[in-house]
Length: 139
Image: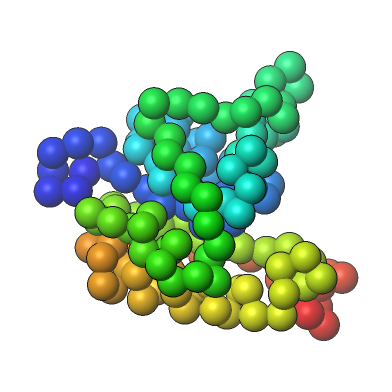
């Protein structure tokens, strides 16, 4: 973990989408501490894939999960997720332009990288996106 004192801490952005929910669920299953940023924290739920049909859609809660309300386009919101350092970052930003705006992906990713450099204490990042594939090609 950070300074070797605890479990690994992973920050997740795009935490209410399919990939983000799955990332949170898998990290918790591996014993990691997870910090997630969500515009709507109530949408951080058990994913249908790994969570199974009987649990899918129920609130995802764990003593190892901290969900912070905020927006990835606001640097101060991103910074609070990184506070004290993290061991790795998962960026799963996406969504329809009409819902998230034209600059969420670029501004959000820029904020995440800057916060990693200034506060996060890590250069380990995984960025997963389907933006630019299929129907979103022209976004």
